[in-house]
Image 1 (spheres, rainbow, N blue to C red):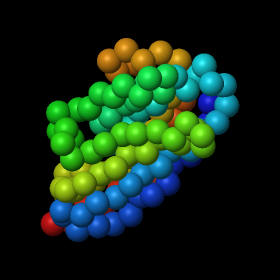
Image 2 (cartoon, rainbow, N blue to C red):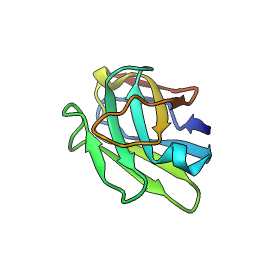
Image 3 (cartoon, rainbow, N blue to C red):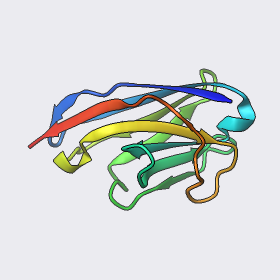
Image 4 (cartoon, helix red, strand yellow):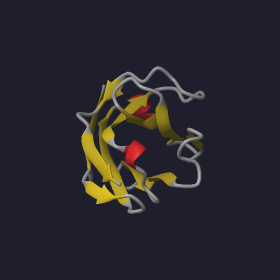
Length: 118
């Protein structure tokens, strides 16, 4: 099992920045891969393999979003820069025991709301 708790969502103007946090806990094996999603079960925004820190991004956010981790606190971050109105939504982090391109993530957080105004 794994528990994930998101935070950091807010309302910002277009061009602004936000940093989302995903605090993870539970079985390490179930947190090998952590991803961020705009809406639950939708196409992923970014994911990180916690073993070696390798990352993957959706084309829509490349160059604007950065996913990273702090292994000491088991927290995964999503730095969101140059935000656009179409980035608005409820952002979820999720984890899984494998990290292919986009695995079928099993464990999900409760979400954090991001609103970007024009």
